[in-house]
Image (cartoon, rainbow over all chains, first blue to last red; front, side, top):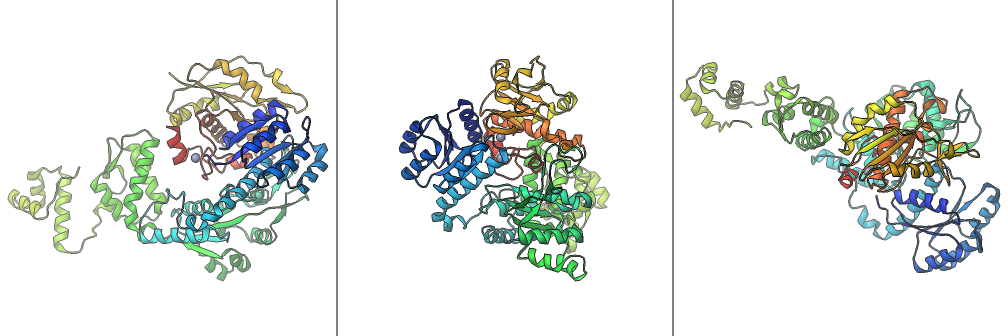
Length: 446
Length: 172
Ligand SMILES: [Zn+2]
Ligand SMILES: [Zn+2]
């Protein structure tokens, strides 16, 4: 992804310039380099770089002086000082002179990524400020949320309203309704989109590992811990923390979670360094948290902390008009994935899907289609590829005429449109059958 | 005919790589095979850092790539590039060679229970990610996309081994 930002790397070591260039090119930046302050200043005068990385130790004019000169040429440029551990004091001086931040060589990839993401967020948001009004009119990156039903459009409207606000969100919905997709949509339309969305599947973590999972642990806290482990709170600094299945966490973890939400600080297991983390919480639940509070199964104070804005995704059976576009979407996706020719949905298959009530929601539909494409042949998903025969037979019509229409159609399809055999099965003669076919405009399905 | 060649370089889990070949091939729609090469990695060891210089190893692998080929070296050794304290892998945008390390993908090194399945999932994501760079893809911000830039091992567990819609279009 191109991010339309430019970086200048000023360092006298060729290997450093090359390594960093490659790193930032892969990140989508336009990159230029300079081996000393003189070359750097020439380039800075000719071009408005967004970010300038300056090594503090340069031949001739040093990084401190270069930083001051940059500020007099282009005071909007974000200057990041690169320094060895030994010269942190001078880096602090550079900060006083207006540098954005500093980073010690060799950098922890996580640390440099974090600084650069923060910088690009600042730059992007200041550029966007003018167009903010336009931007919040429409959502971006929501192509995976399929459907045009009122229910889903309503959900998207709420996403649009809440995305930029940075407030905590609870997403309610039965399992398989796509709560994580909605969380992603909020994240990708918020100013935190330059950072990742960190997901915690609360229900999947063993109680005894929950602390390490969320808070991390220091090197040596456990046998063989050669490297420290970052917890999810730490990973989510600057980012969005998505707590899936929040209703499953224990009472003990509810207290811990509440404390971190209030203070935004924590320590890793086996350590006493205090970490600060700035994250936005989005959580999802398929259980009614208010009811759990009433039953004493969920802390009321935590619930109120989380329940600032709530979005409810309707189950698929309440938005049946979305079944068709969703089916088409999954057919396309899985056919491509498995290199299959499948392009269409047979009429009977489509009807069976439309009549089914999908207790497992969108995920169940997705699984059905995936399976049908695995076992199916040809370019069309057939009813026989779906485990829904019983559903197809389920009557949804009310009048006797409708019933007759569907019954005749079913028999014709059963006998492969052999008129004699179908007529015999129906207990009518062939002429009667022909006239009924004409009356109900029954056609052979493809 | 361009191909993807996977080369184990001081890497113990050759069977793990073998199982990945069809997956990688399907993802890029290119024949993928495993080859061997006798490259001694000791000269690339940096005693001060106790790590191996990824950029220098990559330079040695470049001549092994035939026209249109993409080579991925896979090692258990801990890798670095000059300014960074460690890397999971390295590639050049549109380049022919990538290098991936399994060293920091092992759960036990973080004091957690060993998990061979998780290890191979992480390794596959690394290989596909670096190959993505070799095929010209840049990092992607869409949550879940394999081209998301990950600098910490458990961040890798947050993404899939799949390209998002946008990256898939660019790959074509
Ligand atoms: Zn990358
Ligand atoms: Zn992508």
